[in-house]
Length: 109
Image (cartoon, rainbow, N blue to C red):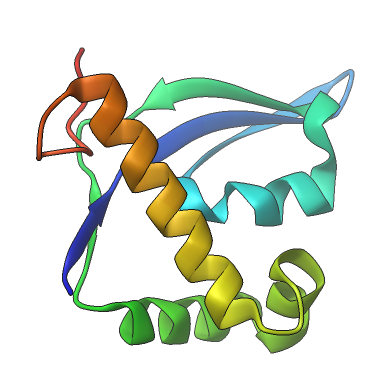
């Protein structure tokens, strides 16, 4: 199963003097919420270029390489592969419902 998922642009506020702009696939948002909390993250919107992946296994491998298995377990649970897959599927379903189309990750801007 190949997939396409929206990429989010967010601002993370570290303190009153500094904030960071981050761009990442939508299913990685729970990782940043876990690290920073919801009150420090502001979602600006979707970018024009969606994230494409070959299959669920390769996407999980990419996330393990990027964040490590311990971080993924703390965010998505001990069976983090299932948690990541569920997160991606929920995002795809919501995008499809919002857009009413098959190309779920394209920005409407």
